[in-house]
Amino acid sequence: MSQSHTLLINADDQPELLERLLRIVRHRGFRLMSLDMHHTDDTNTVEITLQVKSDRPIANLQSQLDKLWDVSRVRLLPLEQQ
Image (cartoon, rainbow, N blue to C red):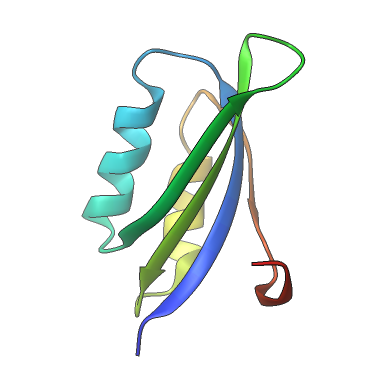
């Protein structure tokens, strides 16, 4: 049974950032349900909210996203906040 998860990602604003994030989501077997991105007060960083769905463990995706050099933080929202 597929579960929905929401990840909050803080990262440096780089032209290739979204492409790499989406590639990891696809390669890890997750389906992208929604994506929201906005610049924080510091224009060199962005906050991205990803909502994904899969029957695979979310920890695998979270770990892979956290390894990207321009990603500073990946947080998984608890189910009640989604």
